[in-house]
View 1: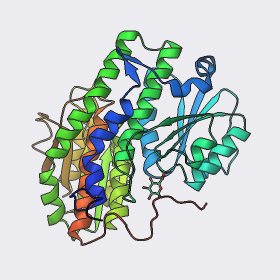
View 2: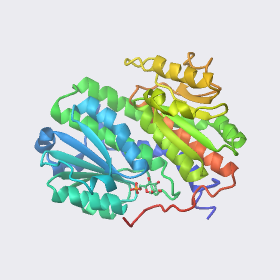
View 3: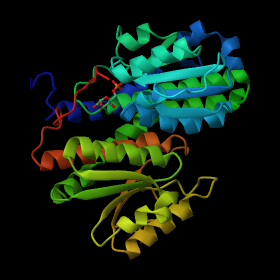
Amino acid sequence: SAAEKGGWSSFMAKEISEEPEAVANTLIGRTADGAVHLEELAPLGDEVLAGIDRIVVIACGTAAYAGMLAKYAVESWSRIPVDVELSHEFRYRSPVITERTLVISISQSGETMDTLMAVKFARESGAKVLSVCNTQGSSIPRESDAVLYTHAGPEVAVASTKAFVAQVAALYLVGLHLATVRGTLDAKAIARNVRQLHDIPEKLAKTIESANRLRELAHWMADTQSVLFLGRNVGYPIAMEGALKLKELAYIHAEGFAAGELKHGPIALIEPGQVVFVIVPSPRDKLSLHPKVVSNIQEIRARGARVIAIAEQGDAAVHPYADEVIPIPLAAPLFEPILAVAPLHIFAMELAAAKGLDVDQPRNLAKSVTVE
Ligand code: G6P
């Protein structure tokens, strides 16, 4: 009903507006004085966590992209190798799992059958399972050794938005906890990252407030047949998420690519008028990925692509080459993608609305897929 939507045109519009709150609420009570406190992880035991030699993240859909993003942070902070696998793929091969493997499942609903089966399978294979879940009392937490709840609040729209950013926040906390118990980051570095996490809600709110330009773009693009998304490093999972949302909501053929892969295939798709979103790394990033992505933009622009860049505020280098620049506030490189995803959520929603589609209930999809 209209009342449940709190004055918003759709649950999705309401839930995107709640992204900052979803992150803030997921952090509440879990950090103090620059340190991370995750009592929920106690059932796993800090000695066990100190001894794990591998993490396997299992999830489906948007939750899997949250896992892909977290891989960059968790590996960098804890030095534990992380693999991210779709639950239904993981379950039906012979994955190498030992008692030193930590499996982390991610599910908004806690009812996704593919992920539930994968969790049971992982435990039968001897792994400890930590589940990141948004729904109290759901099935996946019941089957897990430990549960870290995201506090995004109920998510009604079929396509996941606020749960995604909450999942990333929760996984970043896990990464910092692991770095603490394993001593791979010192207290100062932990405190710096905790501060970055706490700064996200305000920056995310600013990003969402300044999204009007995306609304206009989406309305002009109602007839678009195909959209590509390029991202590199932490921008890569965001490119995948942007493409997924456009497929789900606007029924547009969309693909996300790693920007470095462009010349190995996807560039053949570029023809005049092709719209390409590019998630641009910060010019301040120490890996020097920024000039590489700017040169990707030049390459596709030279072939007629229409480029919409999502770039750090004040990034002057992209302006001459992009048709549109959507600015996001400054954040450390690992945290930028949590800001960059919101414009893509808004764009997909607005494009679907421009086509007259039901953004909360896209055709053929279900909020929780309780069959394999
Ligand atoms: C469905 C939804 C997606 C969601 C996926 C995983 O396919 O349409 O939006 O990402 O399930 O759901 P879960 O509840 O496990 O996060």
